[in-house]
Length: 109
Length: 117
Image: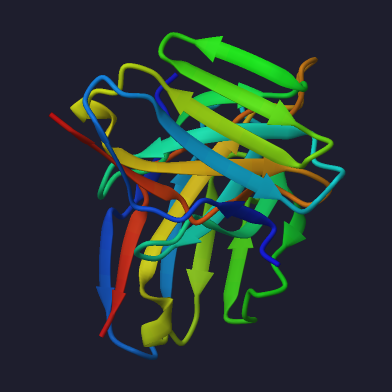
């Protein structure tokens, strides 16, 4: 089992729709959770961090964390073509920061 | 905050040669990480430093790979006797110490793309 798993893509949504990205992790001792966006040929850039169970909202982005289910998700509301990228889930646990393989999102105009 | 700087941006080398990459982290960050990323995959952890101490090294990392951070500032990653399988993007990232909420996020450099022919 991979340490961090993301729903396989690619994911395609129409402009203005909600995009839902999911991530599960294996280390129950994980403490901090992050979502990164990576455009093709570029390095990852931080979108959001979340540390406590529940929802955290930042503009059009909402991160959700459920430690009991070892699950973290990212919702993107009112998706825009500029949101088209690969989204990486990252988890900091007893070992160091581990990344999922990423989910490629395409937002179609 | 000038960001994380990596040099060179691109490196093409022949199989069997040694290569060295440099990373300059954000100045107030005491943690520095090296990752490797291949096409279609997420960043794969290689090693990290807290100040000058190398605290963890991936079990998957061959003995041909070595990293240093001699004065707790910049870091170098050396790959000896390169193989074609080493072709990848090598990413450096830095972060602050753990804050009240939890571990600080990583800030990535632009990476060094290595091609081994």
